Image (cartoon, rainbow, N blue to C red; front, side, top):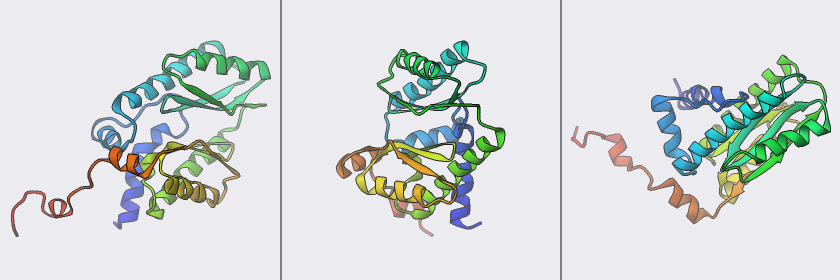
Length: 216
């Protein structure tokens, strides 16, 4: 199995639960731990984001169930809302509910007013998310785990803590992905020095090659 295929399979295993679902069920065990170690958010912020997602989903579901399709993605305590609602009043009310959830520091309300999307449309959105993630890996210029990709109605939303160079790469990759109609940049740009600090020391190549520390 070549390196690119192996990487894509690993990404798929980790990302499938978070592509389009309302609940932030992240991969458990070793997979979840691996994601946490490469995330530039603090562990407490990651936990807050997961909590925000399930709380917003639960609160909105209590009030809106018919003729609505709403997904939430929280990153760094800022919440992206996508989907379809039947009226402008519903769109405003959902944003109000989300703003009332503890720890939420900002809302991107991208809800569309109209009929609920079809299953095939949602499946296509999931496919596009996977495709963009795979192309980010192939680019070799940005760690795909630093960019959260959300797709709705063939519009790709990018969230994450990235450098200017990484942001430019991610946006270009998403824009040139076949089937993507539009890219919305919600990335938070940080200085290169801060990114290096958050990423921690680079792995020791010699130790990786010989993890037991013994000679051959």
